[in-house]
Image (cartoon, rainbow, N blue to C red; front, side, top):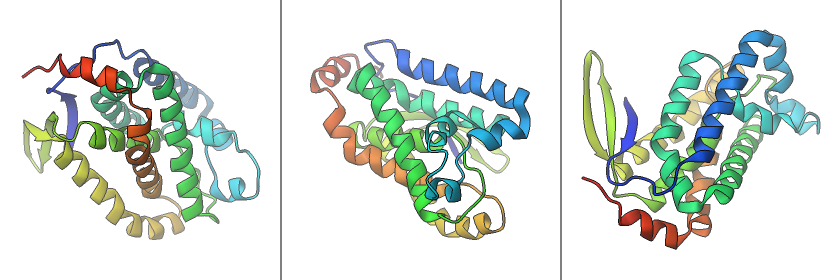
Length: 224
């Protein structure tokens, strides 16, 4: 298991205001979840069968700022901080915000399409973050990512090319989708189809949204 820490090949030219804001909102919403309990989660998370019935569409937006527990939110925010600042810098804050939100919407719609009759609540920023990762793979495939590698009891920090790290992550999500069908039918599981949908969206749209001038300026700030 690899946990990305940061891109060591470049640093953003501009401050990642949107990425920091998204992380802050996720933390604030998580606090509201802790205070509101199950009632809050049921009200604002995505239930595929309810969406298919044409109800509570607003949850497609609200659910992408919610999480199922401490490890869920910590893991997601670590991944977002590892890849988000560079993509925000490449797109600009307005385009990046629109991209992130649309990525989250597409991710949840993919999950709804895959599990249209499910009444299991879906929540999390994973789909939107997967879109950011898809964009990163297309925009900076050769960048080197400092990664915390966990192999059983063996723990080390190493450097892995973005194409390898993100590519392996995507393949895991893709193959795990088959198993997740069984898990969802039994009342739970990870929404892998949301990860796949978000990732594909990010990979397809990245080139249309990035600003070549920003990337050129960013490239001049490469670090070793």
